[in-house]
Length: 276
Image (cartoon, rainbow, N blue to C red; front, side, top):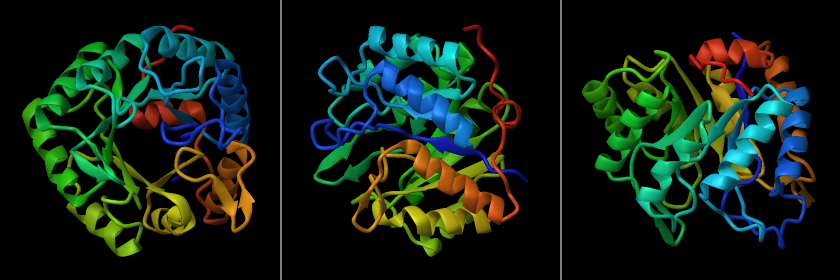
């Protein structure tokens, strides 16, 4: 089995002033997408920034980024519906108007450092049905073990997503969420409902490499990128997202699970091709 590598290049937490190499403009995202695809990524998870490099859910900014990436690379384009922890729920639903291939769908509320990342069940349910109607494939983000139970409820209530595949990502190491340990990850995997067809893992910060190793050894897939980790090694900041993708591709290849192509990833996730 080959490895699906997702790159999350920007996120909503790091400030451009603090991390100038963070890709925040459309031109930077296009260059990042191309380079990361060459390094082994098959999907890109996007948070969008405005002209002042601040997180935004403005449809114009989102659509411009989606259209630019779709015309310049073949990566599966996944938009975050999480936005930043300060975005209202109604605005987060409008992300689907930008016509991404995929969207994130977080399966519950979680403490997020000093903030609260709000995802009540009614919002999750509404977002899921909208994604089904728009033929957008969700990736279910699980920050805690209770989120696995909420995922099962969602699938039992509304059926399978568009494309018929159910892919989840365990986001570990967020202060307030599940720890980035092998034991916690394996507990979550053991709880996954039978409809789940694939899973990946993300380790925040210094949990990046341990979660990579744990996921690959257990048959999972990978998400890497500067949204989650801005240090390549102790005292060595990441200079480009492609560094993290290339390392993930190298480790996956060493484990005899080389990176999945974009075409294979579309079939694997049930993602339809949209015109550029």
